[in-house]
Image (cartoon, rainbow, N blue to C red; front, side, top):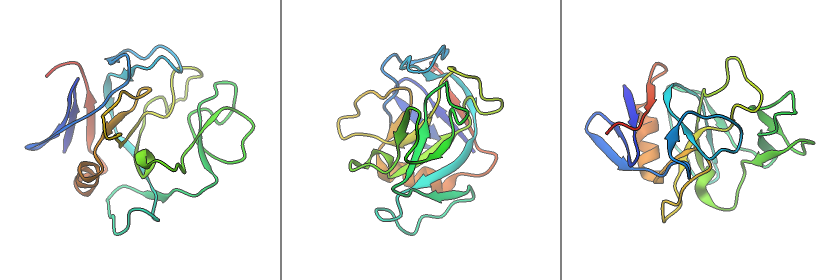
Length: 166
């Protein structure tokens, strides 16, 4: 399966769904915090899930249950940059267990992971969109039902292609 993401939509097979992207659109990611959704081809490393909010989800990709003490390091000064971390954590990070539902389900893309380059960008996810589809800080966001449907169809070799082309 191939998933394509462009300026407005995430598509695969005949399925097409509206998506939100980084505030500065799709482009070449230059540094941490530049608000760009990185163009390129990626794979899903693993899935993070709030099991207290979403049950009975299955996938061929590894699913990790989000705990209250989980975060994602976005601090280039840390050895754990662009990795899942246990809270409390002494460097800058994003908390994954949120009151709002945007991180109920997260597809972790393998952006800047092999090798991890300091300050090249972190936490590029496909996650649940806010109701108004407001722009993200670089992630791709779609509605929760669509995200569940994507997960059901994912395979280990699924390629996610992000580009400005329609």
